Image 1: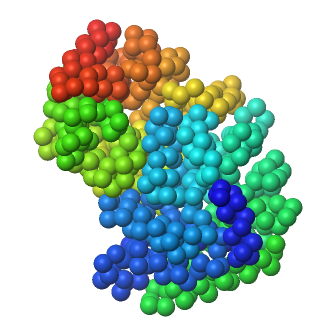
Image 2 (image 1 turned 120 degrees about the vertical axis):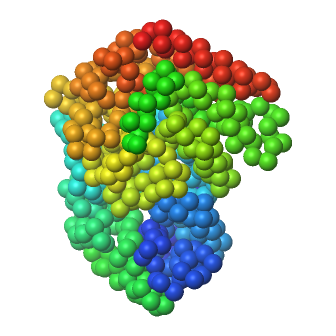
Image 3 (image 1 turned 30 degrees about the vertical axis):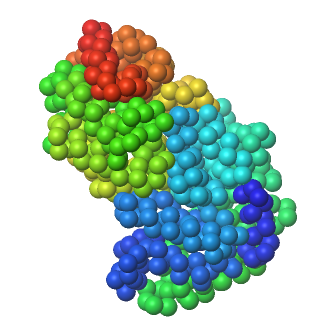
Length: 272
Length: 272
């Protein structure tokens, strides 16, 4: 089953567009877990156990794990193995924003798909198509190309008007074109900029978008859904990380995360 | 000592602008090393031992190591530790092309500078300035922002024209501006496109550029030096990887790599 099929299936089964971001930071997890043998994995396991039937995907951010060195990479691997064993119906989007010349991208594709067994990855468009081909050639995987990002300085380059259109729209148009060849392209589009989302939906009516920036980063959920949903009221993966996983800092954090995830899921479905 | 000082010093000491790229691929190293406990490290150690007084930097490409999982990361760590212990005068540029929103970039900065102890890193400009600040704030480190890359599809976005200038020139101008604040910016500029190099040198007369694409990728050395050198005949780090490290596939590969490195160093100095 391809990533896109897996995604469509779980969206229906769990009736959810919510993705929980596993940006697990050793400094932010409950104190008591730090005595455990693997605090990061123990944290993730409880989050996954508490939320698995409320979500359409998990999105670990690889930087949080690699910042801890080999120990962190081991925690990430263990987390992904756990999801694949216990909840194999839920896709893993590895947020890695990789890209380089093709021979190097081949190695990155091995990292995310062979080492970490991710179902999908985020990639950076700056190098252009040939840098992404090693990812795109993995037909059963999902390749999320960054379009418009959530950060303030995104306008440094992404909003520059080139031949009458902002750069991010050139990127979006190319992604739509590449998808005709590879059929496994998706896009990352920030929730904090609802007009951008509307413009990109117009040129990619059928594509799934990964939308960060709703929880802590402050995107307006109602607007995002109005501007971003496909005609079938699906097509968005709404990522929330900190607002769910760090909603409590005691032994009840799993329960609290579930409550928060339920609230977000319901809110999203209310506006769908 | 800052990265830039360390770099200027070794360029003078070794009279070399040559950087050896440690893109060490398990499939390309001499067969006999595969019986060793740590083939990748054993290979790198011999390359470093054979070339350390001919180079101004080593540039491991992180993707080749992470493609091998935790074992690969351990080989990278061991390689960097080895250079730092045996040849501490030679800076390590970790080629990682990282960038994300600031909270994530902070984690990436920990990965490259705290876990892997690199002296410098390559980063991707697509997110804009705030995504790079966590790197730039490491005042003693060198931050190489990608300008124009070597791959064919680089023109997908990097050459798009805005106000009469291509995107990569807008990036270069921003990097020059950011450098006024942080004083640790450098740029990656492809050797395969000599006019681009000339244009970027014009707006950044004093900056060091990392120039990939000379060896296997086919950039013309003479042109590159003519267009890229600073007035003091320095300011370029010319990276060659495969043409040096894979020049022989037998037990003499270290000797052969030294010969190749010497040839490139001399050729570069001839045209300087």
